[in-house]
Length: 272
Image (cartoon, rainbow, N blue to C red; front, side, top):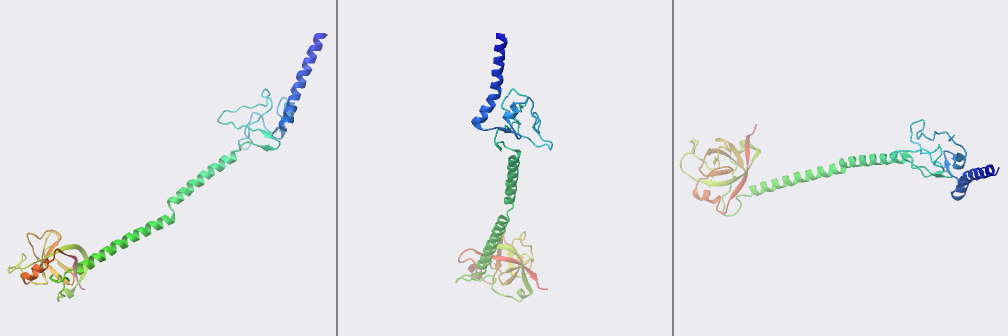
């Protein structure tokens, strides 16, 4: 009888302890809830009877559900997950501290927006406009340099003591117009009594000697206001250099009396 009484007493104490611990925990930190059911209620049943299977972490629509947490790890309501899928939920009252999948989706959306913004900045209209303006400014600078070069070439022969270059508008010059530019040539002057290499007699304001690999024999060019014709060659006339024929030694020497001379040369195009 005493043994039965002792065992009955121990069993009663164990049962009382099992039901008293959850109540004591709720009194300390407040009731804990899982899917609308308090943990104290869960502790009173062997199986979880809520709307979600304790071992199933997904809903019927396939969305990730918070992992069930019970007060007693030994109950069948306890569920375990792998570290990759772990998402522990501890609820107090009705407020949950679980991290739902929504913020993750928002984060990925934010990264997509950031990526889109970065891609948009690569084709920013303001950047394209700045590049276009820079190109136009560079083109304008090149044009200004070309104009300055032409003006400098046009002023050749205006200094005192120098022989003018291409200053005479001959009758032949009126029958031609300036075509494309052939570039800047160094200008020198020469004088002589013999025939030219082409077999013609040289004439001032008409005959020039040139490198025929650059300007073939018979080529007509504009130098300032005068049309000249390539009729002669020279041993020192190589590359972008033109030797203009003059009627006297003094005039020829005066071309380079004050230093090197340069002028822009244009193709002479017959007027239609």
